Image (cartoon, rainbow, N blue to C red; front, side, top):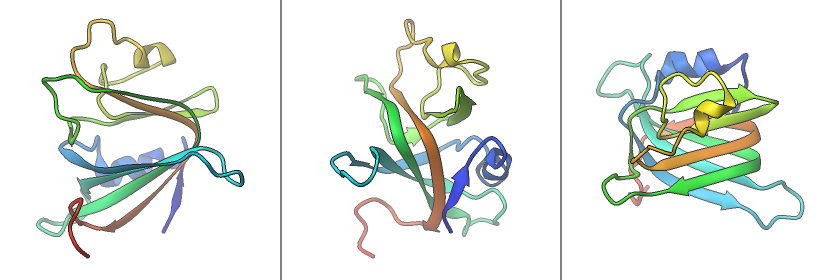
Length: 145
C-alpha cells in the first residue's frame, strides 16, 4: 500500500526501518519527460523491517519523490553507493529532504544538508515537494521474479 511521507507519518516509517542502517540501494529511476506529471524519482532500497523477525525481515522499500527541486549525486572513488550507513529524512520550507549519505547524524536546519566542504564521502540528496513510500517482497536488483 502506497503511503504519503509527511512530518505526521515519519515516526511510523522510523518505527519500521529506523535509520535504514545497512540498507542497499537497488534502483534509481526518473520520470522527467512527462507532460502530465511533475518530475519524480523512485528509489528502491533493500532494508530490514525492524517489526518483523529475521530471517523474513528483509523487504524492498520504494520512495517516490515528486516535484523534485534538487537532485544531487556525487560519487567518490573510495566509497560505494550501494550500502547506506544512515538515511536522514527531514522537512523544511514545505519540502522533504532525503540524504542517503548524511554529513551529520541529526540535521536541524537546511544548512546541515549543505555542510559538504570537508566531506570525503559520496553525496546523494533528493529534495522534493512530496514523497510516498511502499514496500514489496525483497528481491535483489537484477534478480528474475
